[in-house]
Length: 470
Ligand SMILES: C=C(O[C@H]1C=CC=C(C(=O)O)[C@@H]1O)C(=O)O
Ligand SMILES: [Mg+2]
Image (cartoon, rainbow, N blue to C red; front, top):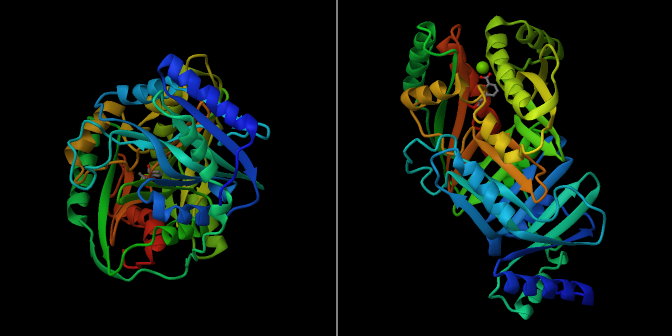
């Protein structure tokens, strides 16, 4: 389906091209259209032929906000091993002049925006699994679907360079009519499970690492450290990414679902943990740490929740996170507020202690500067921050890559949202590596922490086809 651009849009593109030529700087032109409802998973699948390896999927809890990107119009990435990796993305993004053509009033999450993420620890030597993932990588999607409540939008982006010619630019916007995406006949079978061939658990090394960590905490080297383990799975057939995302959406409605394609590898997960959300100068973070299983009945579930709310070990684990996030907010926000005591946040497989922290960003404190300050919170790293990261490097028998690191989006007005990429896995062909970690404090018992990682692996295991024996 080819849409014909009307006169004013053509003129708009022409002006952008003239500007690019005059200033010798590329200009981003972003055309947003409100359209009839499109199913996000179908839109995602419709990009398979042309955009495989260059797609992303994002939805917030209860799926009231979903974004799907198809095609990398351009990529900003760096291998900086210092905090500069955050600033560099922000600086490069700000450098582009952005022009927005819209036929409706402004809607956050449409128009020019970057989607991507960072690695957990850029100082850790790369390993084979994560070799292709940069320390920071963000993409401007060529086509993007945004669904907010009952409204659906399509954004088409183009990086117009001084070398471009007008006809190709106009064609770019003409060729991608929203109709094409609705007609894709893909059927997503969320019921069908994958048949799994083998599983590698790496249990012993991890339990030993937890024992060493508790000894170091007792020796007052550190207050808390989060240690993670990985599980490797192999299936008899290629894993279907739509099935995984579809099942995560269905089974984890209280989590953020994310999928980021990096060539043949897909980093995917369902995390309940928001790192930061910024809308104008309003900012919101969540402290999520301290865990217990779900009950089999309503009353057992309630009892377990109450036990968690009063459990000293879990409260210590949680309070360390609240203190750090509040301190970070005090530095860059005014009117910082948080409830006195944690509440419960329940996902399908686990319940957590939960404290939201709110504030208003002071002038000059941008979304990525706050991501930099917060990462990693003690829910993913530990406390004190630098010592905890060193401990993880020393004790953890794996490479985290993008696991437990910030993944999310940022628009051209510094609005956006980042989560921490936990309850996640890296998928390639018929293989998956899944990750789960636990906050280790002085009172931690390796056996119960191991059990906790098993609960945290369940969302991804189930989405992959319901392997029960992990
Ligand atoms: C590090 C993970 O979870 C963190 C988030 C919530 C609760 C946690 C805990 O109770 O240990 C962890 O700090 C993970 O799921 O891999
Ligand atoms: Mg825990």
